[in-house]
Structure formats: structure tokens, C-alpha cells
Image (cartoon, rainbow, N blue to C red):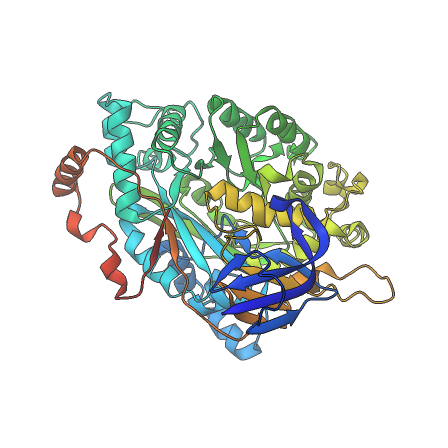
Length: 549
């Protein structure tokens, strides 16, 4: 099947296209070069006056797994409210089914999403949940850094090669795309009644520090050739003065690639009368000095949400702030811990206004949009459906100023945001959400519109009237047209087709001897058998679920 997308304004930073008018050609789900004159097309779509980008990629969004399901169970009233009020924009994962997730992402022009925190013991559950999400392709990052076997190996002074084999075995067993580290060692330390855990603190009973764990896993990811850098949730999330933790973590990377997640929650100083301030400029100064580091923002936006995390220290420290007043803390045998705490970000709040402003400061002050990524840490800072609102805040300085007028002025006075006039461009948005995101994940067949790419394409209608500035929120909320693998799945904001997505995975080689070590550990300490642990192609019936990089 041959399709032509005609006369659109193409934004594709990978090809240095910044609104040039042109055509795209799709043959059997792949973008191809111009087939030349006198070719008969099966379908032609007129994109005159519209903006054309590759399908967007969300590198960090909690869409599946135990925390997601626990949030749904914890907040059943949100399901009832949705049915009673017929709400158009439910606030969080707690209200969404798998179908909702796929449809809502597709309507915004997203075609790939990464679940950034897959506990290995729950990998099959995560993949089965993601397989139920229609349209979008998915991937997951396997969590290591608090598991008993890794810490035992490090305590026994195991060589880096053996650690590498264990990491590679885990990636294969869980069908993960990459590796996630959450407050390295912190969840295990919590089991020994530790309530604060810094980069150089030592895990009780194991004699290894958070820094050592992080560096060991980072080296493993690099030596195994994992395309995505180790994805790091730093120590001291949400605490005043934690910018120094983020800077120290950058330095701990020793020049090797590392990705820092939801960095807004680490851009906090301890200045001012309330002992809480913006340290966005300090963080970005260090970021500019470390070109090996990438970051996603984790923007806070106002309203009700639910926070979910494997960082049990951070979650437990904030359970008293739960709104509504209920929460869950949990422990997984031999692997990790975590918590689910509902929360409402309020415009009148000094702290919440600062968080909102700090995220925007990071976006607007950053000099390298190709290393800074567009996330809300869904649902922790805000649901992913708030992305269009965030885009408008970043692209429309007048709108941003209007919003600031309703916020806590004492907090805003402690930030640079009121003085920032910068407006991000469509190229900036395409870079952060398309070309750079695909490159970061090692997904070379998407994020761009060059021949050979899969035909994941989003078309937006700017709706200009008499030269007025487009309403970017409306534009990015409901795409005019979305192709997934060359199939039209959205027309004028309405889902019209729901194909199955695939899961992206990376399966490096390893010495088979590590399997014996893992089995001995399972037989001694786990309540389930090793043959019940791994994810297999046959778990999903006959449909091809995994795409192997």
C-alpha cells in the first residue's frame, strides 16, 4: 500500500527540517523516498497548513505494573466519579484502563511509551498489562540496585564480569529495554529502619555504598552495550538542598553516559525564610559541564494526582501529606520496596508553586534541548494528559504570565521564572519528544521522518486565525491525523483504529554460568520458582509481542 501525505510543514530535527513544506511517502508501513511521477497512490492526505512531526515518544511514564494497579485499588472512588460525572480528563492512572492509556496517548500524537520502573519479579505482569494497551509501542526498564543477589555479589567482591552477566541475565529474563536504579540501596536500607539514605551511605548488612552500587550498574550497562544509559532515580528525592545530591551524582558518573530521571524533584535549594528554594540555575550549571548526562524534567502541574514510586524512603516520608488521607507501602521479597500516596498540587501552596516554577525554569534555561526530555513523571508530577498544557506554558510567554498571577507570589519571587521571556519553538518540542528521545533509547527506526523509518507520524492543525498565536494546548491535545506503522489511527482527535503495539527489548549475551548462581539464590530465598520468573514469547499467544534491538 502506497500513501502520500501532501504539503505539510515538516518538523524533523534529525533531518534539519524546521517547518519546510514537503511531502511524505509511506509504503507498507515504512517511510520511503519520493517514488517519482506517474505513481498511483492508494490514499492521499492533504496536510496543507498543518504541522507534521514523527510520532512522539515518552521516555518515562508509569503505565503498568504493581504500583499502577495498587493506585487503582487504593482510589476506587475515582472510577465512580468518572462514571458519575462523565469526566473528560480523569486525573491519573488510578482512573484509567489500558485502553484509556493507549487512546489518550494516540490522540496527542504519541506512538511509543516507556514504563521506567519494572520490578523483575513482576515483569510478566508488566508486559501483560502493556500488551493490553492499544496502538502505542511500549518498553520497560528493569529495576536493579536494591535486590539481594546483586548486593550479595558486591559484598563478596564479585568481579565486574560476573555483575555484567547478572545484569544481562536480568534484561533477558524480563525482556527489558534498559536498566533503572532507584535510590540505589535505599529500599534495602529502609528494611533496617534507615529513613534517610545519601550517595555515600552504606547499606546495612552488605557493606556497599549507594555510590558503589550505582557506578557498578552504570559500568555494566556501558560494557554490555545497552543503548539507553542507566536510568537513575537519585537519592534524597524531594528534600530541600538536594541539588547537591544531583550534582554529586553527575560527578559520580565519571564521564560515562547516565540519565537522571524527573530532575525537577532534585533542583531544590535550602535558602529563604522557609528553607526551600529554587536551585534550577545551579543544577543546569552542572548539567552544562557534564555532556555525558541526560535528564528528564518531571514537571509538576496543579491538580489531583497519585504518586507512585519504588523509593520507599521518599514515599514513606510524605505519607502524612496524602490527599485523600490513605496510602500504601509495600515490600517485595528480595528485590525492592515502594509506596503509593495520593496527592493534590495546589496553586496557593508555597512548595507546589516552587515545584511548578522550577520545572519551567529547567526547560526555559536549558541550553541543550537534545539532552533534556519532556516528562511529568506520570502520574507523580501530573498525568501525561497534561502535556498539552505544559507545551502551551513553554511556547506562550503571555499565557505563562497569566498563570503566574494566580500562584503563590512569595514562592515565585524566589525563582527566575517571572523574568524569563523565552518561548520554546516547534523544533524544540520535536527534539525533546521525538528525535532526541528516540536516540536516547536506541530506537533508530523512529523519532524521525527519513526514508527507512517506521511510519509513526503525527499531524497537527495550528488553527491560526487572522495571524493570532495558535492555541498550542488545543493543537497538541487532539492531533488532526496520526499514523501508526502507516495505519491511520486518529482523525481529528478521534481514535479510528486500534492495532496492537509491540514491546522494544534489548537482550545482551551473557555467560550461562550466571544462571546457576541465580537458580541457587532462588531456590534458597524465593517463594516462586525460577522457571516462573522469566518472560517468554509464548506468554502472549501467537501474536509477535517483542521487537528485539
